Length: 57
Image (cartoon, rainbow, N blue to C red; front, side, top):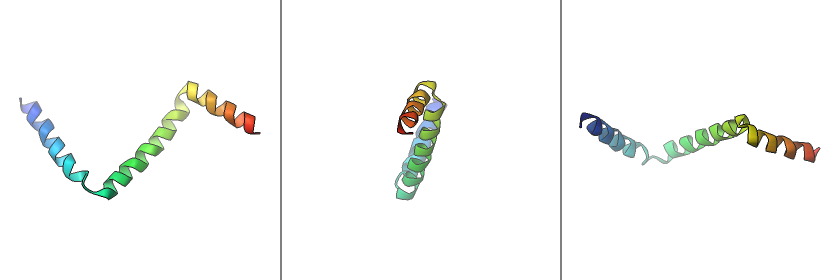
């Protein structure tokens, strides 16, 4: 039960952070950047991107 108490405490603290629109904008920008980097490292999506770029040139 002490673990559950600490999880609930973290959720209450994070709820306070999510009230700020600036924090949401920062999290969204970081998530978009990391998402674009992850897509480049997945082999399947990298092949799709390379084919698309080859067809444009």
